[in-house]
Image 1 (spheres, rainbow, N blue to C red):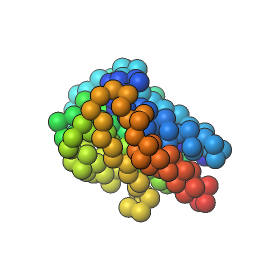
Image 2: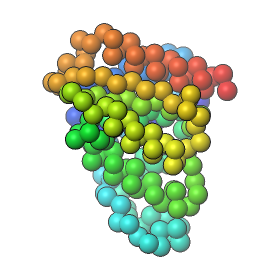
Image 3: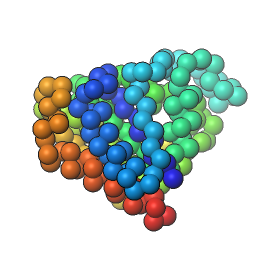
Amino acid sequence: MNIVAIVGSPRVHGNTNYLTDQALEEAGKLGLETTKFDLTQYQINPCQGHDECGNFNSCPQRDDAELVLQALYEADGVILASPVYFFNVTAQLKALMDRSRFYRRHKQRMKAKCIGIITVAQGGGSEATAKTLLDYIKLTATVPTERILQVHALAKTEGEIAGNASAIEEARSLGKSIAAELLAS
C-alpha cells in the first residue's frame, strides 16, 4: 500500500510541506510506503488545451507532468496539499490539475481509496481552496465523501506552523487515518 502526496507550495521548507511531512511520517510508521512530490522541484507546464487531447496516445508536452500524474493515479492513498493563494490552490498545483485533463479525456480515474486535503492559509480562503480540491477529486476519483479527510491550518510566516501543536496533531491524525483506511481495505 502506498500514499502519494502532491504539494503545491513554492516553498520546499514551508508550512504546507511541514504538515504534509507530518502526515506521511505517521503513515510510514504504520508500514505504508510514502512518496512526496514537491511540485516546485518538477517542470510542469500549463495545459495547452488541445481539442483533440482524447485522440492522442500521450500528452504531446514533454515535461515532468506524466511522472507525477502516473504516481498520483496509481496510488492507494493520496494527499493533495496547497497553501492558499488568492482563495485558491497555487499555480503549481493548478497546472498539474489541468494537465490531468489528458487522463480525464481517456476516462481514467485515480485508484485512491482514501484522499487527504491539507491547506494552509494566512487568514481566510481555506474553504474555497478545499472546495477547488474537492471538485477536482469528484472529477478524477471515485472516493466516497467520508474517505476524503481534511486539515486546514493558519500560518502567516514561513516555519510558523512548527509551533502549532493543534495543526501538527491534525496532520498526523490525517496520516494515521489514511493508513488505517488503506490497511482495512
